[in-house]
Length: 574
Image 1 (cartoon, one colour):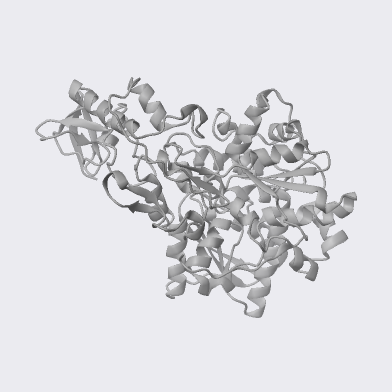
Image 2 (cartoon, rainbow, N blue to C red; image 1 turned 45 degrees about the vertical axis):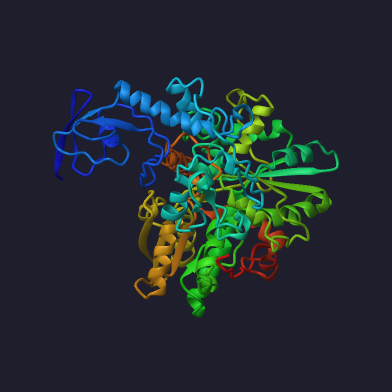
């Protein structure tokens, strides 16, 4: 690869020819302030906070988009550069509501941090406030257009990474807005509620719709029996949300914290992840045997479900009819669990703890009431749990580890890896390979589906059939795979799709750390927890076996279909 040498602040730097000045400075250990830039997105150079002085250039250049050239001379810290950056930042602040103490992003806001880092303690320009209405139409997300700084991050992640195109720039000048098309709100649009816009927004212009107050109210109600299920991706990210090392597994301490918060029973979504493998695996084998619709496509990611309903309604028959583990749990909490414990299901308040904003949307879908009630009453994200822990003044590090409660506390390593891309496919293979071939897989770690690549392919022999598998995360990758299938360019038997890049570990409700990407640490922690589990195959979950024996009969039984399976809805673009 061709390399070039440039001089930055008097130091020679050797970088690839296609690098930007920002990348060259990072390689040299120099920090150039940024705001519209995000390492996971294509740079746009909108905010001009990263400007630098380049010898021979007629004006200052935005480091995030300016390409390097051989023998280029760059200065990043001259009086002119510092003054230009401060001016650009002050102009942004002049039109921004200064509501920091009550903002959702207070103390975790890139605009706020930049003002501190650059010594901006007052704004010398008089701006105007738009006083635009908030968009609270979505069950998952809230938009505050007044706080938008027009960095374009949300637009780029929605179009480039997710291929949803729900957001864009509209109007011009002072009347510019970022959002759905004029006349539409998030709930009316093609938005899939994934929340990737919220995790990339540097300020508080879009964030999850919180139900924390509703959960506190339910906990305080003596007539409510409040149960909580915790997803595996939350267990390896809550530490990060509380300021601890990214990827630190906190399962035992999190269970203890949830009890201190007042939940009557603390369960895990991993129980119903194991259940999903048995239901979905049985469904796949049935389709292979009976020439059913193939490929079978996973259905546990609600953002993905809404995406296919809008964009590929002709492939809805290929979706597994299985509900997500969250919704399976909700249905069982108000049926099996209620009956087993003699509790009136109308008094059960079911809370799920998720890394995902789209789970809020999923819980509100009208078909998710097979228990006779709304199956999941409230969904809180990793970020919301962190707020509850702070509100309760809990020091999670000082809590002794505790276990989940029976019967929905039993889990396997296979269920844990649901939290990362490739985990559903690997968990399914651990069970199907053994049940069909009569022996364990050669190794429990199925490397072809591991890693954060957006598209992965593999093939496994099951009973003499080479079952072709695709694994994808991020909806732009899902669109690419489905277009291949539609056009006859690829043939698969099983496709795992997760809406968010990296799977649940990269969910829209996960901790936001100013542009940092901690998915690698979270995934490593997921696999570490799996490897340490004594039971690593879903069909060996003893509590799931007992559930079938006592209540469901067998996978895909009539009762299982009533409670654990669902249907889908073709949708227009708007």
